[in-house]
Length: 542
Ligand code: FDA
Image 1 (cartoon, rainbow, N blue to C red):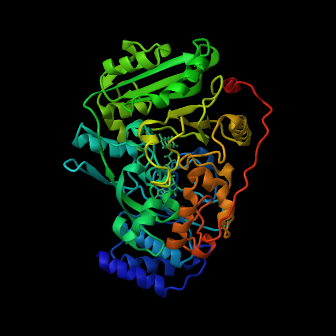
Image 2 (cartoon, protein in one colour):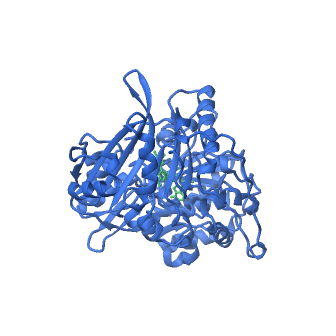
Image 3 (cartoon, helix red, strand yellow):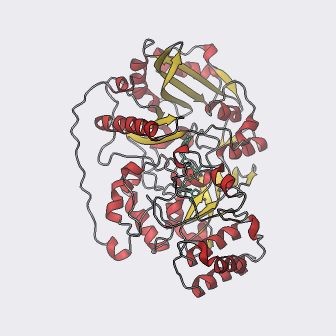
C-alpha cells in the first residue's frame, strides 16, 4: 500500500497541472484526486464542506481561543479529517495540485489561531488531525510512538498506564496536542531535568510538500533538525513522533504556596529570580502572578508551584537550604505519583483522577492573547509578568544549535504574559489587547535584548507577519530571529531545500532561502527603545 501510494503521489504531482482555485468549483477534479491517491477512502468521512452537517462542530471542536471563533473569522473552504497517513498524503497532494493552501491543526492551541484560520484573502483547507491520536508505548525500550493529534494528557496517561516509572517532559496543559507542541519546543515540569519535549524526539513520520511520507532516515539530517522546534507548519505535516520516555520516581512531591503583596510577594519574587534556575534539576519552582478575588477585594498574588522528583523530606530540605524565605511547611507538601502530579500541575488539585487527562474538552475556553519574553538578568524590585518558568539544569546544558529552539544557557526564566477574558465584543478585546501590549512595552528594559527573544509556541503576531504571496526572508528576520536566533538562517535554508515554492506557509512561517541568496549574508538593524517609565514592574499590575 505504501509503495503504491508513494508511486501515485509522484505521478499525481507530476501529471496534474497546478492551478489556483479560490473555491471548490472544481471539486469534481479535487474528489477524483483523492480517489486516485487514496482509493479505499470513504470521502464522506474525510471531507467536510461548509454545508456538511458536521462542518461547524468539527471546526469549533478545537478552536481553543474564542478570539477566533466569531463570524468575522475567515472559515476554511473545506475541512479534511484524515484517519491514516495515506489520507494525510492524499490531502497534501490534492490540495497542492489544486492550489489550495493547508492549515494543519492538532490540538488547536496556537495563541494566534494559525492552525485553523488564515488572515490572507485566499481560501484554505483545514487539515484536522484529531483522528490521528494513537499512542504506542514500548516500556522495554523506554520509547513511544505518538500520533500528531494525541494530546499531552493522552500521552501522559498512556505512558503511566504501562509504567509508573516512565514519564515525558512536556507542557502542563493536557489538551495541547503533540503535533504543534513538539514541533515548536515544548517545556514543562520535567524540562529542567530532561530538556524540552523536542529534545527527546528520536524519529518522526511526516508528509513533505511533494507528498512523500518520510521518516528520520529518508528526510535527512536538516529536515529532521528543522521540525524539532522550528515549527512543523513551515515544513510539512507531522504524522507521528517517536519519543524517548524518561525515568520518574514512584513518588514525587508538589506544593503550591500563595503570597499576596502584604505577605511580601514582591520580595519573594525578587529572590525567586536569583534562586529558581540554580536549584537542583530534580526541583522545579514556577511562579504565576495573577489577580485573585479576596473577599470583596481584587489583589495581586504570587503562586509558587513546585514539582520535586522525590519525597517531601527532600523537597523541604532543598527549600529550607535555598529559599527559606518562602516559608514552605510540611503540610504544604503532598506526595503522589508522577501521573497525579500531571493532573495537579494542570490545576486540578483536589485529588481528581488521572482519567481526566484524556478529556479533550477538559479546559474551559476563553478569549486570550499571549506574549513571551526571556530574562537574562534579574529584574530589579520584582516583575509584573504572569507565568514564569525557571531555566537552568538540563535546559542550560544543551547547545543553542542542537535543535532550532535556541533559548538555553544564560536565561534565568521565561515569561508568558497572558491576558484572558470572557466578555465578547470589540470593547473588551481592545481593553485586554491594550493591556498586554502596554505591559510588554513596559517590560522592555528588563528582558533579553538583541534580539528580544520570544518562544515560538507562545506565538505572537505583533512581532510581524509574512505578506501574502511575497514571503521575504529579510522581513521575516524581525520575528524569526526572536524565535530562533542564529538558527533562523539554517531553518530558511532547509525550507529552501524542501519546500522552495513555499506551499506550507502561514503568517509566520519560515520563508525559503534559496542557496544563491544564502551566499549573501543579510544584516538586521535593531532599534533601541527609550524607556521613560521606571516604575516597579509588579506595580504595573495594580
Ligand atoms: P495547533 O493545532 O493550534 O498547532 C500549533 C501550530 O502547529 C500551528 O502552526 C499548526 O499549523 C502547527 N501544527 C499543528 N499540528 C501540526 C502537524 N501535525 N504538522 C505540522 N504542523 C502542525 N507550551 C509549552 O511549551 N508549555 C506549556 O506548558 C504550554 N501550555 C499551554 C497552555 C495553553 C492553555 C495554551 C493555549 C498553550 C500552551 N502552550 C504551552 C503552547 C503550546 O505548546 C502551543 O500553542 C502548541 O503549538 C500547541 O500545539 P497544538 O497542536 O495544540 O496547536
